[in-house]
Length: 342
Image (cartoon, rainbow, N blue to C red):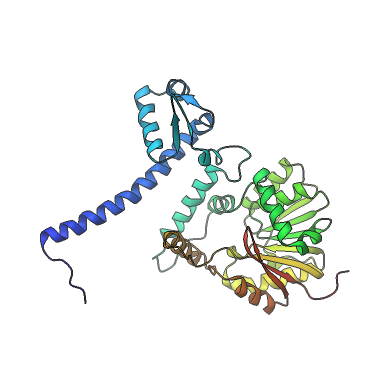
């Protein structure tokens, strides 16, 4: 067994090392807090265009010294860049601020905060309390892209990778099970005018946001969201294809959920399931992976199931595996309800 240092000098060295590590983590959290603060005040939108420090001071309504210090902190964390006499958001950060970007900065920050709530109960014997509607909405909004140019490009690649699914939904009916705020299906509906879709979402607050987004896009005549547990969904042989958001389904609900999906599909109908997490091969990715695993443990949801495991799970519910597809969105399990397409 390794002998730990016992001299005051050695112990001080260890304490200093640990303190520096924790301080570094705290500084990262502080940078996110500062970024959220300037975002809430409109600075990030203003800085999507190059601005002088004087222009930003006039916009912000605070003194030039404070503006200079805030900018110095943002620059130190790589959130803004200086070019001669002007400052602007770093281009990758700007993508989170633009209206048509793939993800929204506010969604990313709120999603992280909602996961922190679950982590704060990681060692409670009873586990975390059920998420509030607001927390569930934060998780839903932070888990998917927004309809827009980037989202359409991702969905185009999905349709290209899974032609069975593409042909089923192009002029057919899609069932989105565990749709959340329905970013993917809303994207598909804007691309495929012949597609009709139904989303099932357990949390009413989340379902309401998905329906409002459909209305804002002018496609609510083709996309309906039901605040409903899929196990209570009684439409039979009505859908040509389905997507199952399997990472959000607890262990004790999954078999019944798959049986309900199978019943809802027409014979020959296609189900796709996405492998969401894999054991990281890079040590740099491991801290995030193990923290997310704790979150999913708190929700009672299996974490990092492989495509092969997901296929076997669906086969137990009566599906046939067509193939496993490597796609730009990760590995996709393509399944089919047995029988002939009518």
